[in-house]
Length: 115
Image 1 (cartoon, rainbow, N blue to C red):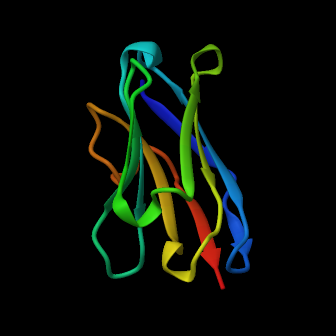
Image 2 (cartoon, rainbow, N blue to C red; image 1 turned 180 degrees about the vertical axis):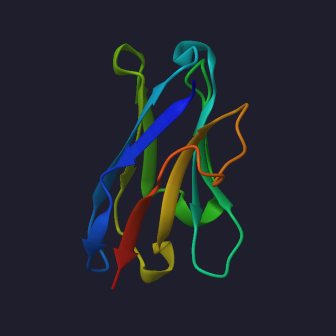
Image 3 (spheres, rainbow, N blue to C red; image 1 turned 90 degrees about the vertical axis):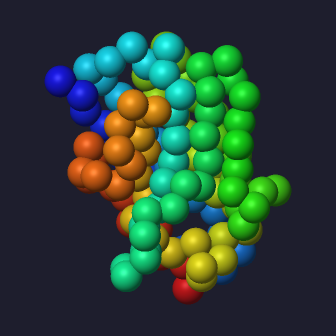
């Protein structure tokens, strides 16, 4: 069965950095597009970044130039390097494969708090 385990969140001051990790199992990671999403209290699930199986990437405008998505197929892991963090980046961050509904509980998510 599909499992996603997110980690790496924490509390940082504005301008700080965090690196999120998401390790996947239960599906063919190499063939899947992966994405990072976030959900702040009272807000809808928001797409942050995606990486396709061919390595192409997408970033929502608010994180361009600050966040970098990458993946390690040997480890079935996708990463999100977050630099120059802002208070508005505060949210629970989730990863999802392209065939999964994001922020839907496939993983527990990881809390990022920027003050």
